[in-house]
Length: 114
Image 1 (cartoon, one colour):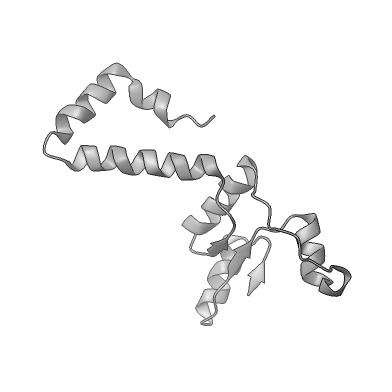
Image 2 (tube, one colour):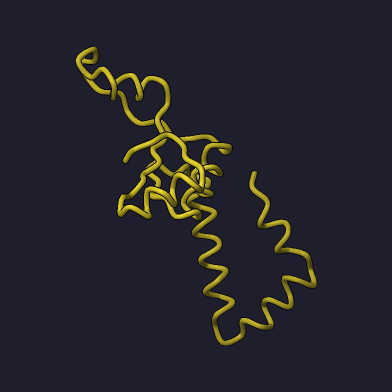
């Protein structure tokens, strides 16, 4: 089932009967093209969501729903940075690096979005 938003009880109820729920991000023009495709000679490109909607979509993903949207570039870069930092921490000198980050407070500066 494709929906724009859902709460946890709806997600659980649909999964309980064996279904799956996919939350899809569509802006106004894309939604209109989805509902009335005959009005468009060329279908519009899918837009990237803003910060607020991206946060919502990631929360829905954590709650167990499938999400479908184009990831913003800043989110892709942040995920790469976190994966690199995780690999460094899992390396042979990971404990020392973690201690250094905590003592310097550098991890707080890096985790803020913006």
